[in-house]
Length: 122
Image 1 (cartoon, helix red, strand yellow):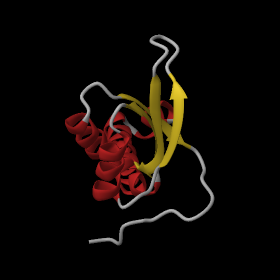
Image 2 (cartoon, one colour):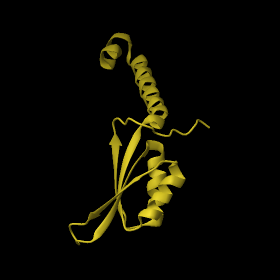
Image 3 (cartoon, rainbow, N blue to C red):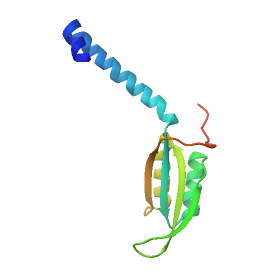
Image 4 (cartoon, one colour):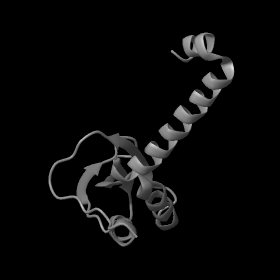
């Protein structure tokens, strides 16, 4: 579309359209990030400390599952939590401080239903 506009109206105007389109897309993506969610699955040997980190940094809860690691056959703890995309990196950094050996899977979450805490705008 922009190539056709460049041919019809000139390359300079087409370039301005490309810059405008890129900039507006980036701004919308940045604003929309507040509403994007990430699911954290954390396998750890320190579930209480990891949960407290999630709670302190995001004001979100977590669900604790017990399991057995297949590799070593030892009991493991799995914490499941959903946080906003802007909180994910900050939360993962905090988990790493508590348990550097934690296995963390961070996934994009398409949709959630139920109560989810959103921080008020500052």
